[in-house]
Length: 373
Ligand code: SIN
Ligand code: CO
Image (cartoon, rainbow, N blue to C red):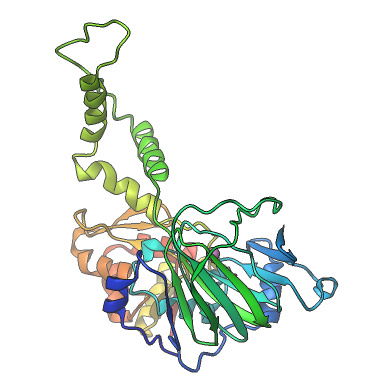
């Protein structure tokens, strides 16, 4: 099952710009998960899920899954489960086909099962999303960006009024729909369906400023105050020059990349949904790692874990799930492999064991990587 997409053309013409449908993006697509497995996952406490029920032109959401779906009947509902890739190997493998986009952007793989008439209603996301159709058929409509009136009488759903579609398609297994942020869309299920939404997010000004402010407070920096050499003649007026001067003071904080790199690394290596590590029990020892190395074990990264390296910062600084780890200087190439590859062969991770054994041990015992043959 391979993604059949002209990536350079897609990035140039559509990504972050225009929605599109790619027919048979994964030819002969086979669902990586069954509806029953999805329903089971939805019942786990660490998994975020919801059921959306449609009543004519209104939609209602309940959080969590259900033990029994019989009450809901065979029509007009949909089960949505977030971050399935964190918990399900084959679902994670599907996401890996989309690593032509950087990991920091990727949010999660949401899988939904819907019966005829089911859908979440017309809405707008702040995120880029790829929707891949699995078994069954769904009709998707996408409207133009712009202002769309909120839909009344659907509490907590953030739906919009009906829109004029610019895309109106029936998706078959293996078809892919891409929707950039801000385009209203609505899926309507025709036959029992599984669909896979790969969501991507980018930080907002609020998130960035919040994270940067937290960093300044934590590190007791950013205490320089505004100064001026001239004052407004009117006592009740804050001059435009002074307003701009204050904003310049703020901007000057970020002249030095070191001021923001650490914040960005921490912020963007975090997951919005819980990871599902399986720390070894009992904890691994250095002797066991040496044995695994002797047996040529490969090092496998935990599904969903983001390992970020920042261009312009020391290559040996890696950010994992909101934390910074600084490896010794000679491990620059190993750090690059750890950031970019999901699996490292024994010969590739050997230098890590030789030069930073404690960090490797910590990572393995956190369940961030696993050793396997
Ligand atoms: C769905 O699968 O119906 C929801 C996906 C989305 O609209 O982003
Ligand atoms: Co959506």
